[in-house]
Image (tube, rainbow, N blue to C red):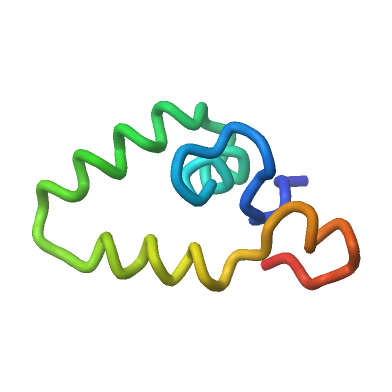
Length: 70
């Protein structure tokens, strides 16, 4: 079973979005961060998606207290 999609409380750089996605998909956080930076070179709404995930993904502490994790 895959890990829940939450922003971890450790291994954060800015908001923990890349670290949470990396944990969910079985990658290292550094690999996910590099993929995000490379994707920013392409046209698209990458920054808006990052901001939306920052807002809507629960932090690990909130998910542990019973809030729904996506």
